[in-house]
Length: 375
Image 1: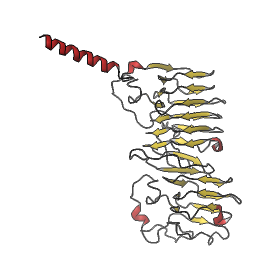
Image 2 (image 1 turned 180 degrees about the horizontal axis):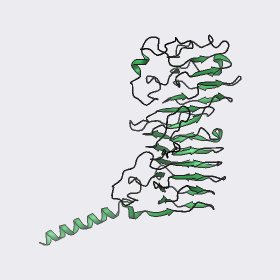
Image 3 (image 1 turned 135 degrees about the vertical axis):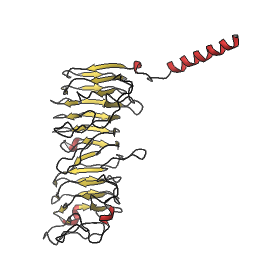
Image 4 (image 1 turned 180 degrees about the vertical axis):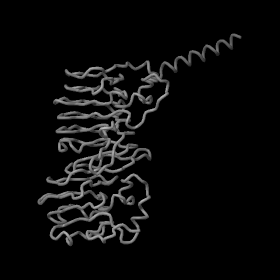
């Protein structure tokens, strides 16, 4: 009998020891801070806590510094964080202690904060957006943006929107399970920077996966090849970099080669004296009836004949992957003889004749027949 009780005591002690030593396994080990007032003065949120945004249309009107390891959860009725009036957010996480912006339903980060015992699951669009308006100097480093990008009935929101006259550093962040929208007139990515002060906005080393649409940029935004658009085999529905703007007026470089640059404008113009430099393997895709207009001719495109460089249709999954989000169902159509989908690369002179005939221009025809779609 003594041997039995001794064994039982060892099991109980071991159980208590291993349970108590598992850090942050239970919700009680996080301090929960409810946020119900706007940020009016310089404020610091300490790391290792959960901050629940409960105020509808929550505004940051002064510098908010967020400590590494913080988890910011948005309730369904209070899904906005707007940074305005020259304010900024300094959110510097680390690889081991990222800062997470997520849904109140997300039990995988910080546990069961809403106390429903796992009765709800997070989904894309659970909360609206973090939006910067007239704001510069914000930093988002080693952060995660998850389950944001709601369509609130008035507009489609981005998880992180660097908006009017704003700039920020977005470095080594993860964007996952966020909503978005493909619309050539109003395209919204999980990270949306079309309206930003793009020259002072840095987008480097980020990972985008399982989003509706990952990234939207202005046509004059330089982009290197440090971002990733897949993770453990998961990509994004509209897997590409969606480029808005009708004119490039400064020398610009596009280095990304994992996914295509999708040109939203019907006629993207590169001004005289300006050059767009492409990396090897860069792919530019054009929507139906789209065109690239080179006022100075082919010399405006540096490395247009580089290894693996293509100019092709939005529907072409064979080059730059599945950008239009419908698998390979368009491939049969694109393979038909005489198919065309966009006008081509115009190199100056007469609109009906001066189009480049480079072998890496696919599915384009500047002089389409009356019946343009193959049957």
